[in-house]
Length: 266
Image (cartoon, rainbow, N blue to C red; front, side, top):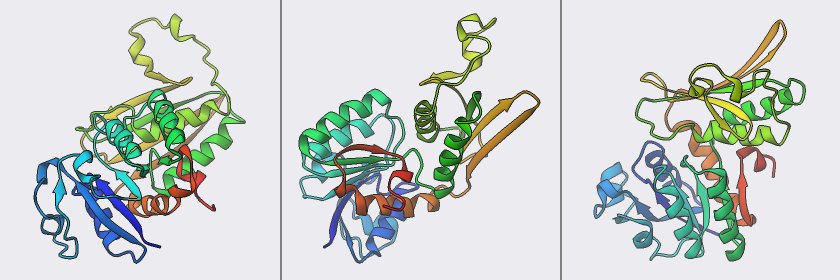
């Protein structure tokens, strides 16, 4: 059975290579594309892939006029929530590759997804090494009670922390809350110097040229320290395979499921 896919952000850093990968897949069909900057043009002309004879739309409502089975979002933090809700209203399952959604946003989306009996799969990062970082961090958190997260990304990334860091902090809360020897309310100096509190974890975001996406979690004990770090070097390749896996499996879900590890081995 062919899975019909609509892709928001179809000409972007990840969306472009993902469009090509879908076009090359025997079980997937790209039926809709969204990219405001290229609205009205043929996707194949923009990407240099003649096989993609699809008119690019400016928004989700226009693109979803053509029915799809799975809606994939690789757009911006300020657009993704509206896209997800619109896709659910149109009866599509959803894969979220964009960052910027809060836990409260996911809770709201989960309500609608369950009402519509649709799956919404979201991963802060679709790269296998990011999944392993999360897995190893959860094991370490069960043994070491103190940690903080450092989130690095390129200078123009507007959302902070990244979806990868936010998801990691959320998952760590399921293990335990970290110990703070100096309560945040007792910090001397600007409170912001201690980073943002995501769940119970302190997260520090760095935005500088020279980074694509990196996340590091640092665990500390008296006299020793453990660092676990994921670095994305290529801005797109690590994410395509994981996204395709999610596209193929999201229809088996109902409600919001977060973290690529939830699909591995399923």
